[in-house]
Image (cartoon, rainbow, N blue to C red; front, side, top):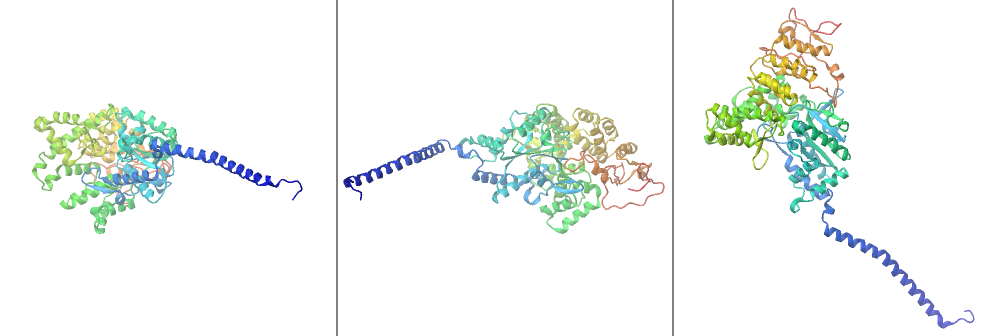
Length: 607
C-alpha cells in the first residue's frame, strides 16, 4: 500500500460510489417506466371511455358475426315467380360464364380480379344470384380462415324516391344484417366510414336498371364519385344489357362483363340440382324433350326461364299430362295462371279462393300497367303504394261486376295466396311484383288490343318498355307488323335491333316484311338471303367468325343477340339472327327451286 494513505477514508469512498449508482438507476427507471405507465394508463382509460375505438374496424369477431348473417340471409332464395318454392343457392346455383375469343370463362373469377366491374345481361340471366352466391362464397372463405374485403350487397332500387346517400344504403344493409348488437346500433356508420377509408369493402350494387328515370342521373353520378373517392374498395354493378349503353358510370367502370346464356352443360347441371328432378331418368327425359324442341331449348338457356321450365314440369305438367310451352309469353301465362288458381286446383278450402282467376288476373294486369307508367314520375316503376293498388282496383270493379266492398278482400287474396305481389315494408304500404319480367308481361297483356298505346309508351321511354314490346308481340293475337314496322323505321340502331328481336316473339307478322328486316341485318354482315315464299326464306345462318369480330364487351357482342324468326303458321323456325342454329341439325334436303343464302361474289349454299 502506498505510503501516507488514510486507511479510514476507503470504506466511505466505496459507499458513496454505490449510492451514486443506485440513484442513477432509479432516475433512469423513473424516466423510462414512468413514461410507459403514463401511456399505458392513458390507453387503458381511453379504452374504458371509448369502447368504439376497438370496433372502428371489422375485427375478426365482427366479421364472423357478419358471415353468419350472410349465410342465414342469402342461402335460401325464393323462386322468382312463386313464393312458397325456395332454392338452396349452394345446391342449385350454376356458375355464370362469359365468352372470350370463343371460350367460356367464369364470371365470378373475372370480377374478383378487377377493382370496378359492370356485369350486364338480359332479364333473368342470373345477375342477382351471382352476387348472392359471391356473398356466400366469401362467408365460406372467412370460416376457412381467409382474410378478404368484406362484401356488402346493396339493392339499387332503394335509391328511388329518396335522398339517401350510398353510405346510408350501406349502413342500412349492415343494420339489417345485425352486425352491431350494441344498444342503438350507433357504431355502424363509424365502422363503415373507416372500412371505406381503408379499402376494406367489396360493394355489390345490384340492379342499376331498376333505378327510375327521375333518379338515374343522380345515382350514376353517386356511383362515379363513390368509386373515385374510395378507390381502394372493390365495386361490382349489375344491370340489364339494354339499359347499360355507353359508359354512364365513367372510365373507372370500363371493365364490362356480359353474362353468356347457359350452354348444354349448364342446363344439365341445373336440372341435376333441381330437387323435383332427383331421378336421373327424369332429368334425361326433360333434357331430351328440350333437345328435340329447338325453340324450347333456346328458352332453357335463360336461368329464369329454365327455373320456370323445371318448376312447371315437376309441379304442373307431369301431374296433368300436358306439354311444356315453347315461348316466353306462354310460360309466363302458365306460371301466373297456375299461381292464381292452384288453391282451387289442389282442392284447398273454398274460403281461401273466393275470386275467379280471371278477376284476379284483370287486377294484376291493370296494376302492372299502372306501375310501368310511373317510370317518368318521382316513383320508380317497380314499387306501387297500397293506396294506388286500391284506387286501381276500385276503378276496375264495375267491369268485374263487383262493388267497392271487394277491394280489400280481392287484393288480400292476390297478395296472400298467389304472392305475385309482395310487400316491401312491415307496414305493407308499398308492394312490388315478385319479378320485373312478370310485371312487364302483365302490362303487355293489358295492352294486347292497344298497339298504338304500346307504341306511344315505348317511344316515350324505350329502355323501360323494350321488354314489354317484345312480350306484347308474343302475347297478343293481333298482327304485330304495324308495331314492328314503326320501331324498325326509327334511325337508331337499338330500335332496329328490337324490331329483329320482336320477330322471334311475334305470333303474327307479315312474311315479306319479316324477310326485309332479316336481310337488312344480313347485309350488315355481308350476307343476303334470297328466295320467294316461306320455304325459300327459312335458313339457318351461322356467323361464328363475324360474331367474334363484332364489338365485344367482356368477350361477347355489344348488342343483345337477336333470336330466330318464326313465320305465321309455321311449326319450325329459321335463323335470321346471328349465331342461331337449330339443335341437332344438319342441312335438310333442298326442295326444287329453293335458293340459299348468298355471300356477295360467292355461290349459293344451304344453311
